[in-house]
Image 1: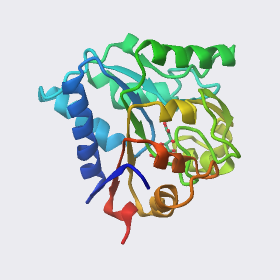
Image 2: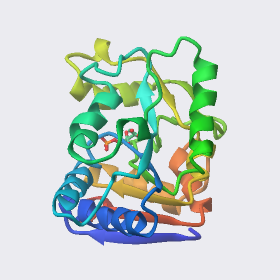
Image 3: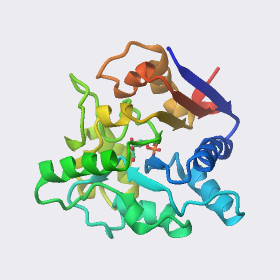
Image 4: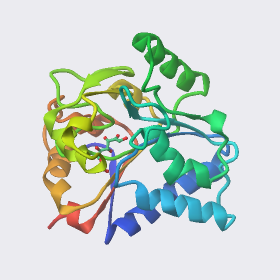
Length: 243
Ligand code: F6R
């Protein structure tokens, strides 16, 4: 491991507060910064904390731009399980960020390569991502970059693995309803961020956390590439860190 800062916090809430500190520092230093955001359960305490801090007058999202990591293919923005809807309900609707300053890949894109290219272009036009938030899947995926034989560079379409569909079925009525494909920023897109914060909670993430940060760098464990990023802060709870 080369450049990873590690913070072990006692609880998922404390992980959220520690991650919020990183966002707060960035937004104070650069009010029109570009943040990369993730969905899933792990960032929820962070999002609650960011909402509370803006309400308390400690933060101002009115000039912040955000780009989300991923979206299910085939889900409309207002679908209850779409990642756009998740972001609206868990963060955007409660803070002062401007709707035009938030982007999520278009789940209904008719021309997939054009949508993916335009997504990359928008991030580039904004000047690149200053701070990228990541969670981690049990198979080491980041965004929806699943284990593969190479590290995909740019935003692209992926087929979801059985493991990821199984893990995400908790949000759907049945496994059949979980989409089989998604759009995700590439590993290259993620690695281009100037700073990365990964949040990890729960004992069930311990093994993959150790493999990712202390094992060999391999596309079979996509998160292991983070060992080569110059500015990663890993914030995990005691359960994920283990003994
Ligand atoms: C979601 C994303 C995924 C999740 C990962 C962990 O936007 O990028 O890689 O971070 O699947 O999800 P949770 O936090 O629900 O365990």
